[in-house]
Image 1 (cartoon, rainbow, N blue to C red):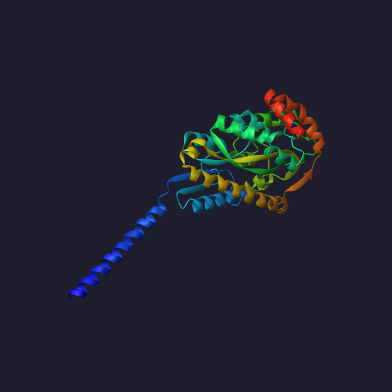
Image 2: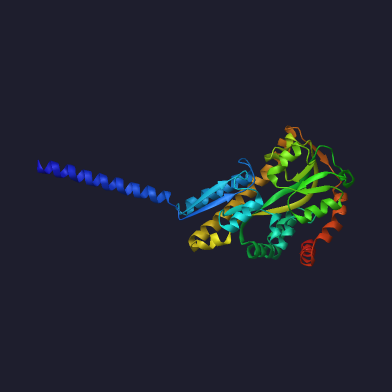
Length: 330
């Protein structure tokens, strides 16, 4: 009798201890030391979101759950500028951003200068050169953001409801541009009427005819469903550019060195993953937009480049002009 009671009690204690250990283990898995809020403007299907989710997967696995990554696509945390401001205030942590960084770091203007880069190889050579390092350093110093990875963007193209084949066709065209002074100055010099506007407002403004045109890479033309409100994709290729995945410097510095390395390693893998997706996606995008009814228009790119050049050079300050010339010589 005593033995039976003892054995039963012992079993209960063992089971209770195992359950307690399991509960403690599950709680430890749920409790991350750091949470990264990663917001961006693209939709769920866009390759930017796919790469953000890849980053989440890598960081959470390689940190053994000590870092949790929350991904917010579709401007859920606000516009690009909103998220940058939120990172600086400490209420968000990461985003994908590009030429808008020049609002803090003037050298970042070189990330998206009209007709600066000859081709993809020239762009990559620039990003991976000392010039690219200078741009990254200024972004960190002036904006408090640390570039973790970079992605090539497809060339920016002009969409409209009438074909645009030469700069003369731009006369008076009400055109949305991002809040980038260089873009405003260049399009204005070429005869358009550029209007800075948040990306989230563009579709409705095109629908209501507040603006007549916009310019973006094919990936964002598709993800924003501009095919529903625009008929033509005019192949201006006017800007070849890159973007950065950035994290708040204060957030990164708050992590121990081993977790900082986890973040940086995951970002490096994310960059390689995006490169693969990007090359496959460019062809698919053109085919997809054509299937959705958009007509692709070949334009006189040389005429656009010639018309843009004086305006671009006038818009650059002395430091930017020096970098511009150095890039031309690469």
